[in-house]
Image (cartoon, rainbow over all chains, first blue to last red; front, side, top):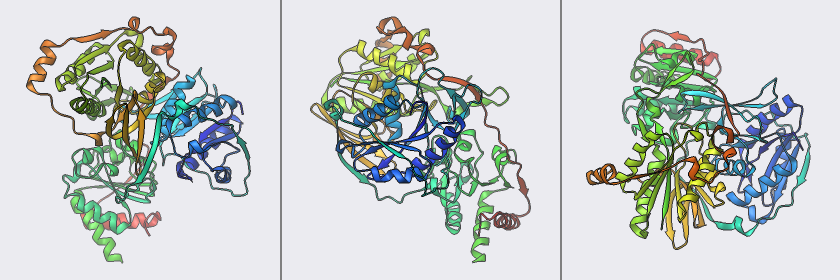
Length: 329
Length: 262
């Protein structure tokens, strides 16, 4: 409805993505601050049954575009469907996930509607005076935070990365309204054809969902040096992360990168080893519950954000921790 | 196959420092480079030209010193380069940038394919590519990691978080590319000499675009930067001392107390 807050509920091959629940968590707060309803845009084929899950996670209304030609994500028909819903129901705010789908779709939608879009936000708030959306995002490789507003055009649009916003506790007794939107693609929407999707059977690094991350940076010194990091991560049942320096030097693969240009993580425990703590890196890990810093340089910025710090050589301390934990078993 | 490659000159963010008091960037002494993803875009255009023939035009919107980035592209092997530069573009957000570049593309006229880098390392938005495609009413494929041209179509592998999808697009289209796609070549000495001595960089200003003035620059930009600031570290941590073994033991105790280790 006019003035509501909408989020885009991303589904892939019939599965609602976790990030949709995260956006509902953030959207719920925005809607409550504005005293309006929270809507979820759901596009796909045979996806109506997902609405209940969206209600449970905070949606009041699900705007559903259900048609065979939108079974798989394709930019043009999805843009048409999303724009139709937005133009018809005139939300004040629309939040998309900063996934490979959301970052393809949201800019296209924003350009078509001639409205503003702020990418990869780490904070979404309502300005108490103007009631405008204030989108906070890291910029210049995370060196700086910027607050962006869209004062004139509507809706105000932003994307948020997976792992940044917190879902609310689901309540399966919550109900809501499903609004079905008549959707028909036009021939021009079919200029891109979907041929196939392939899941790659590499060992997936799931940093975003890890409870414990042991991360290494410049101080690790080499690819071999990461063995100490790996062993500690293994005995803790955690994942291995790396700073941009570690990734740029080829010591660890890019999908392990934490930071503004890498992944945003929020584990219960983050152990930063030989990481100086540039804003670029901090932008990716400040959501961690407990942060441990191990660094030779007592003036390293990482100590300012750590709950526990040890000044010393990570190649002494990390193996000592691994050994101590093994001895406990 | 005539290709337009859109690039951006960016400060090397690995070298960017910040004035923590003012909450602004210290740009002095920071080298400018061709945005890394855009270099892969240039390389892909060169590879396509090797197979299909045709002409590669590099287009950038930026200040006069972006000429350096264009010369470097020419040195890599591009045929022509155009600098879109005007004070009227100052303050453009991604919407107005895409709109202005789209008008410049229309002014260039003939092309079969537009290639952009996925995102620039200064803003990291990844928005201008798709927004350019929409402004031109062309199909788009983002996150391309493999591109095969066949006739008036392109078959593209698009990277996903957990794999990839294969898409077939009609041409002309806008493709945004990622680093996995190729390894950009270094300019040859001959290429460098030609780029700086023999080639001209074409210039365009706002007046050449046939653009709606209300849609360019700060005025045409829906978003506004309210403020910038340095993220303030906020934790009061405990420094753990002792030998490596002692410190490791103390840390483990603390983490157990906090219930993050069991």
